[in-house]
Length: 599
Image (cartoon, rainbow, N blue to C red; front, side, top):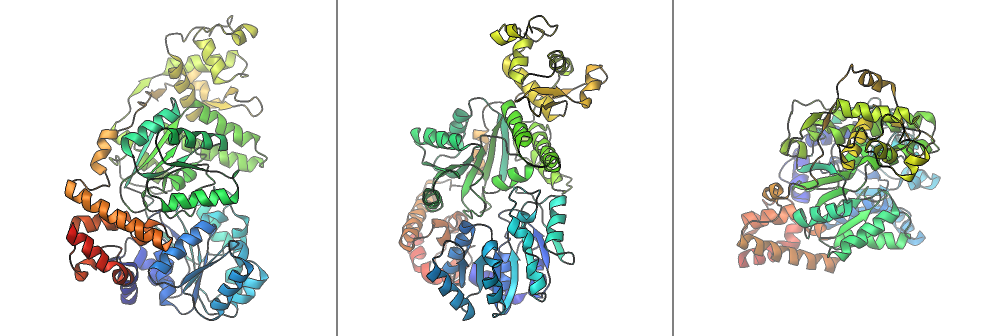
């Protein structure tokens, strides 16, 4: 481990290991298999990159996305580690050159797409070289229940069958108990050691508010908390992605779009802009994000409800990978619930898959409507039992929601569903309850039923919140084939009979905690520090453009902040800065000292 620690300091520029990193590296370096569950930004990559440098041969890293491979290899090459990719982005000539160099022992790590790895050509190629280890990144892709299922991953057990003496490490940031078990079974990791780190991302602030003109709410959030910051905005549809990107651009934001309907070339150009240009906002469907290793994403916003806590955790985890404060912000409403349920029912999946999907959606709704700490809710979902009662960094903890006895109102809502034969959606039911004599109400003679007008004392938005929470609490469900029609379930019987009370949360404010988050601002606070910060960022941008790499490949924001606050004046002092290893000290040390002395 002394050799491993030396590599950590000299090559990667970090002073010490975090959490279980040292134990994992020791186990893998000594030839053991392992499954590693570690949150995004927790340092998973080091767990196989350092053993790759310690063991004889080349490490074969299985990675699902081209962007992920390219980001990793660019960053490794910058610090002097010999890494390459082998995937469909290469021409035939380029791929052959990589293969020749692989046979020549040139590489420390080779990143390979699972489709390429499983070809007969590559499997034969691996028999001709010494292999240090196999790393299977984003291992949750093996799970048919997962949010990023890749069928090729289910065939990766062939690695152990063909190369039984080569140690394997499977890594993921998101896997509940069922997914973990499937990873173990499908990859043949029954004898592997399991390392489970905390899923907690304490630097991320979770904030979920009621949807009310979502674009205006988003704009207010960005202008109030993240002006000039990089961020990701997730939308459910391609149309909404483009409309939202256009809206933000028209209001002075640098926003670009990404979705699967765009050409590969346009997606690639936009992704490069996001990675290379600071302060850019990517508006995207969930097709974007896996493998994005951009450390300075300061916020992830959702304008539509994710389908599961796994998806939510994975997507929000793209914020604050550098450990600096970041926001996970979401607006959520009744239509989100109905839309997600409809998507599950209208999908062509088997009933077993629909059941699992509905269960995962219900867990997501529970997170949205909880009156307890959101962070604790997420950790408990992943099987991490914590004594934490209040994290102090989510909207529920910072501004505890009030609850009210809504038993009578829920009874009215359920009764209205029953008296309309469970054939109508929330909008029509609310019209009935509020006594709105619409053409549709008159058409169905629903102005004649007993529930007409019995809820006129409450505004529409309150009734929408009541129906939304009734669905989230499992008292109502959506019909399979009636386009959003609400139906009663057995759990509502005690409420209708007056045997059970119902407490609902009051609607959350349509604002965010702008003032409170200023204390967690990433930027330097004093004028002098801000001046030096801007000089370092300008220099970093110039160097990155000259080398054709993203700015964070040169140095992370966290490194620049440490330089500003400590202002080292010599090479020995620079060595103590996190993120400055020997290679970067040789390349950039003199430039940094010149800037720092001038500052």
